Length: 124
Image 1 (cartoon, rainbow, N blue to C red):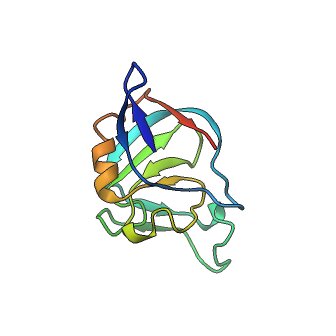
Image 2: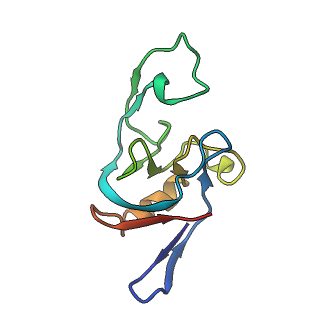
Image 3: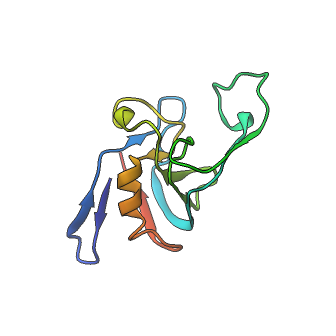
């Protein structure tokens, strides 16, 4: 992930995990809609192709070990966002369900620039 200032100068760069063959990164231009620090995670098996059919919806309380870590940055692309992770060693080594996953410490730094209306560009 790269954050640039208004002149195009890189001001932040971090490794991320993005998409998979089944849930590719949604290439395009999006915007930040909301930013949540220490969010609850609302698990909905209907949104995951690999969910066990017997699983039901669940809410996982906020904290650094919940699936989206310490922050969720929601985008104009429904069900997609930028978020932290409780498993930093997996960044860049595993696939996601389409979102952009960062370490908790990198998503904490990203909060400095993420606010409603901030443009987000996903490129291959």
